[in-house]
Image (cartoon, rainbow over all chains, first blue to last red; front, side, top):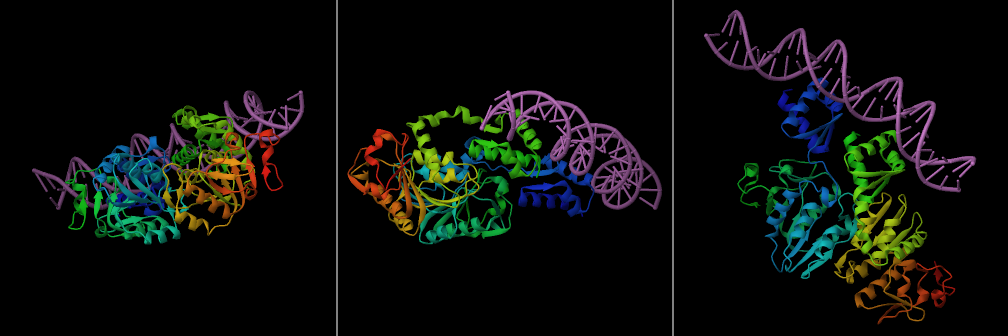
Length: 248
Length: 248
DNA sequence: CGTGTTTATGCGTGTTTATGCAATTAAATA
DNA sequence: TATTTAATTGCATAAACACGCATAAACACG
């Protein structure tokens, strides 16, 4: 196996599991510890992962919902501002949860008049600060991890909605594999959300580009807008340009 | 599990609960006390938390006493502690919103195992911090004033529930007029909540005693427990003593 | 083709890190 | 004050790591 292939393999593991153990890689790749260490070292130098004693972690691995520690907050603010331009008065908007969406809500103009459906209590509370926004919280089981409601009841309620725009964060996006996710329930949820909206915008920080996870949500073509913190012309977005998808 | 992951886990617990016990971490992470102590020590050196005998506290915990702006917080904590004694493992509990309820949720013991239905997003988020609590958020229109969901959809969903205990805050209570409220929708909501529970506890700071408002929710007899910050024998509670109502 | 150079890899050895155990000391609690 | 509970300290060990060296394959070039 060539070095490059090993590196790719390692990065895939990292993107998949957010972590990897040196010892596991030794077994899986059937090379010496030294080789793995050198590989990891090189990947660190390329800024692709984060090395720790015993293995390595994904760079984006961070999972707190605390404001001050929101990962890549600057990028998220840029994304939020771009996405806000999609929200027009009178619209019915459906949103997911996550820090990017929350940032978007905080940046909304004071006087925007719209109806928001959301599965995120935190987003609902934030939306309630706007006088001209009507907020409908979609209820159901509440997920401790992702801080949104999920499960059958949510899906059922979503099926009764037709929103103008769906705003959702993303775990991973890939030119061929489209939107993917790791958890079954969240996967189902996202499908239902997309089905409940005429248009959809995926908010995505650039480091989640070109990653694909186990479960497929939808192909790229099902998404209307892709919003990243990058300039429209950025080369990292090349693979996503198509007639269907608008890149902001 | 890698050390870094443990540290992240601990920080998540801290950010979530504002506190963490050494012994809990030993169990949750399945490592020795020594390891946890060393972890905490290192996190202290990084300035990420605040170590105390028996565990650690969030750094922001001390500075952020903006919680203290909650009106009559001391009384509400007393009420919360009394009411918690009503919550037993295995119960299905239905809660409203409001600062008193929120305080109650924050004071719950770490390991309580129960199912909570709630109409308050903030309560849901707070409940989600407990590993053994299942949280179901009842969705619907979101009220900007009272920060709870309301309206027909909520009533419908409530009609499908039978909880063991309903915990609700109160606007006004009166020996003869019972529970009363000012807003039609909230009134309907409270009726539906009471109907959805076998027993009910009304949390009420003493200044709301002996007041009656325009709309009647229910007579005193429909309530199982009245929880105030006063001693059980306090004279202000004289008018409420009856065979039906238990005063805590 | 031959020779020197670079690259990738593995091995050995000494070092560092992570972790648990035991004995002692300090702190909280009854 | 006595007793439980947590914290500290030093030690032991195994895993992970760094560094130098050796080897062989791949490459470069006259």
